[in-house]
Image (cartoon, rainbow, N blue to C red; front, side, top):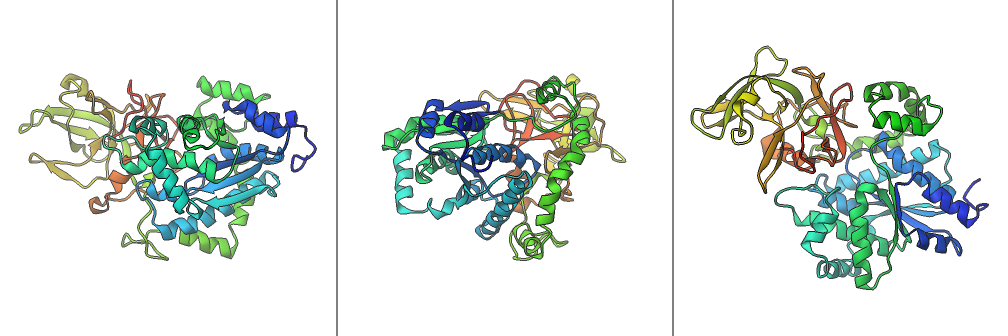
Length: 459
């Protein structure tokens, strides 16, 4: 079957909805299919490089296209700019081109027809007078509580949120109207934004759209006779993440080979160099002289063991810790944990440490790193992150999908690299430490966690 033309409305709906975790507006989609094909959009912010996890939404977009759905992929460049201004406009323009080539190559690699696929940039319409007026209208009806709640799973949660983060769900809701679609597709982590759109768009006189949600966390192939058996085994931790990665490596490479060949052309090599300029030895980027890319691989995070701890002689709320980080001698680190963890529990405690902060004097004692904690302000609670049971001092901690980068020797405090990355570090609903939804793991794939805190920032 190609293009979905031979399918009945029921067959199209089954293809559209299969393997989704949830569909809001199922009846609306079925009614549309009786008359015509569905129009749908999926949005992605053009910041970091597309990676293997993009095959999760791509596999579902493949279903949509095979069902005859008219799919719009929105490159949310304005959203990307508003997200802590992680990339300047000249890089965002180049990355839009890079994303388009990447996504086409992914879909081509799995044999998907592209005749009903189109790409749109957010700035093509989001800076128009009409759209801007609708943003203002939405701000007059959406409460601060609802905006913050809607973005809780996808927008960085901090004590003093920026207005741009509160606008994010509003923009995403309005995109449905301005792209003239019947439905929006995203991960289940987008659900609260979707329900905000369903609640507030009708208040502006716009129709309510359907929403299709992919499950998060797991996916992939292995030599199981039935896929559900693999998923259940992995969910029950019968299959170790490291074993799973090693087993599927050959199949992932087979999937990626045609994409790599596509990007082996001189034209796309040049585009890659411009969109993601390499940092030179002087700490600046090549090609177009823009700022360095803010990616979590620049953080030197390691497992540590506290071998000695005492109270700071000049500050009642501070501990002075000697921490084994796999180096020649333990580092001295000062932490404000006195009011949260008894001193006897600190001795021999395994912790997660950020090691490449610039050393700083804290009440006369130089601190050579930071013990990472899950922390909330009201009521004030702090928990140190928990390394895996089999972790050893000095073992590196990586952010999934960013394992290949090299940490900075020292994070430049003037460029606020740590502050920009820290804004996206938090604990998810399963108490797993994440950066932008990517798990913090050791080289074996074991996760970093908090004990009890859910949805808390990491700092």
